[in-house]
Amino acid sequence: MPVLGQRAFILAPTTDKFVALANEEFTRKIDLTGFGNGWSKIRVALNYAITDTGGGNITNTELFVGLCSGTSFPYGSQQTVNAVGHVFGSQSASTWTRNAGGYFSGGTFNVLRKVGVTLPQTAAVGAPTYIFPSTASPNRRGWLGVTFAQTATTVAVNAFTEAAVSTTSDVWYEHFAYVTNQASTPFVVSSGSETVAITNSNTLNPGASWNNNNLDTVDIYWSNATYRLEIYAIALEFTN
Image (cartoon, rainbow, N blue to C red; front, side, top):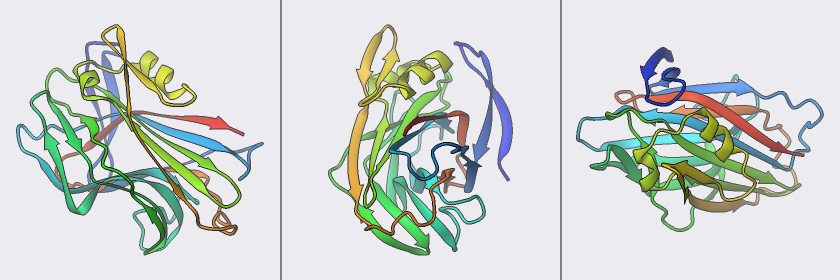
């Protein structure tokens, strides 16, 4: 069961509440009144951090950030109705490297669509180095965003994380909202300067019937049972 807690930060809010996932999944139905399944773009953004290991790497772990159909059978289910998203890492062959600056980096990823236990559509191109903040002192919240741009037959999934230089600063709510609402490649505000986020884009081509089961739910899955994913805020940005 997800754990609720709070952590102290330098920037506002200085005491922030979080929901922590440990081999768990968070789903939240989206109010698509006026949109239906006719939206053209949705960005899912997290204000988050990963529990610090104290020096070691994290292995065999995946973070799924995506959209699914309904809350009953999301990405982590054996009976997934329809889920599309970006998987950072892999439960079978990934290493999240802990860096001296107190953050994790990793380049294993996949863009996929999942129905039941099958992956009818996957795409993985290039080898970006994604950056994930940790709870190492001083505590810092980070920014991660995944953008979904759909047409009648395709969905392009574009993932962003901070650059390593940004992890030295806490991404508080004002900056979190600022980054999330930027139209294309976001910039993360850090210590008075802006640093471009790491980005990678892949397009799935499931065909004209790919979206028969509407993507109407935010879906966050974290597979590690030992080191938690702490989520301080989730924000969505829509384009009809």
